[in-house]
Amino acid sequence: MTVKYLAGVSTLKLTESLCNGCGNCAEVCPHGVMVVENRMARITDLDLCMECGACARNCPERALFVKSGVGCANAVINGMLGRKSSECCCSVDDGKNNCC
Image 1 (cartoon, rainbow, N blue to C red):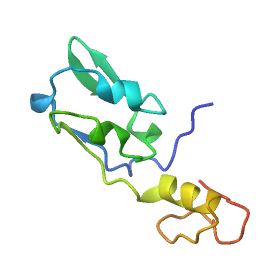
Image 2 (image 1 turned 45 degrees about the vertical axis):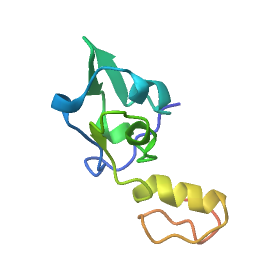
Image 3 (image 1 turned 180 degrees about the vertical axis):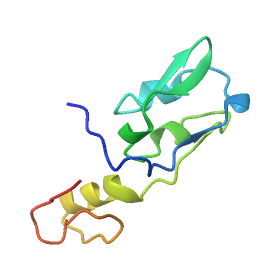
Image 4 (image 1 turned 90 degrees about the horizontal axis):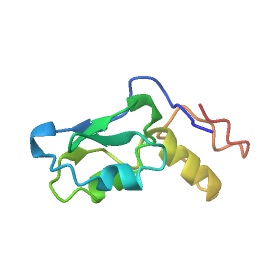
């Protein structure tokens, strides 16, 4: 099941001129946000990004930027760990994990 988060709020950015087409980003992305076509990374659907940061951490050319630890992904993770979070519209403090 593919989960879309809040529309138009992801911080994921790709600088195409820095991309070497290695494919690391597509390999590590848990939601298939990144693909490589013609030796160039491409974002398939920005709203699928949970801002985990795996793509940016695994990009040898630093062609990707994402402010990980914000938004719904952070709230979901904190909720699963029993932590309180105020970074998202999601209600994780009530124990129900009513996320977007």
